[in-house]
Length: 214
Image (cartoon, rainbow, N blue to C red; front, side):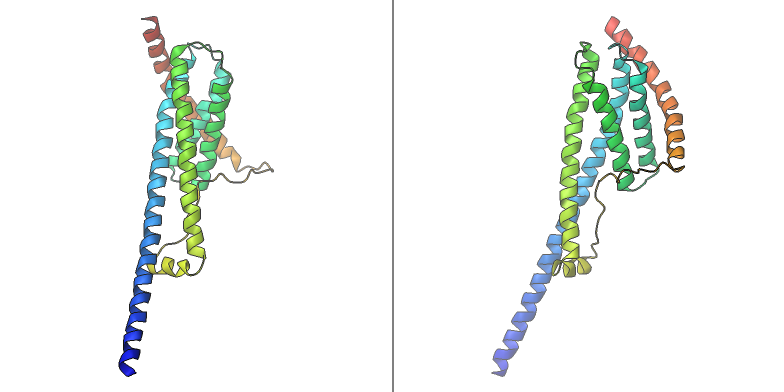
């Protein structure tokens, strides 16, 4: 009886250890997939930054008024500023959503434009928007699964053993109804950077016009 009890105890201990190791391994794999999804998402966002100046440059040949371009330039500058300041994902999601909204308004309101350079860049940006939306969905799904695992027993035990904590999703903050002075620095920063970006875009517009004329 004694030997049987010892064998059973050892078997139970081995089973528990294997169970813990498997749970920790699965949780770390989920964490790694979440990190990779964030890396892919940020890469897609950076690629969109590079496409916006080309759209603005081509908009001159498409006859787009500057009052329709300014919101896009300002939203891009603000999004880049949030990225460079290394703010949280919540703040960055809000800035990126604003850029998406301005791009959608600019491109969606010019369906009758026949200027090919503008059409080409607009289509590339529309494809990029779809890829960004997919990357955000994957990232948030993995983050939600990871947060659920961290907060629910017995997977919360695996999280403690693997030193895995909850993660922030790529979601914009709730809209603020009351206007306060906290928004003024952002507006000033956006206006300042808009002038910088506009000066960078102007030579590209001239280059695009020369190319079309050729």
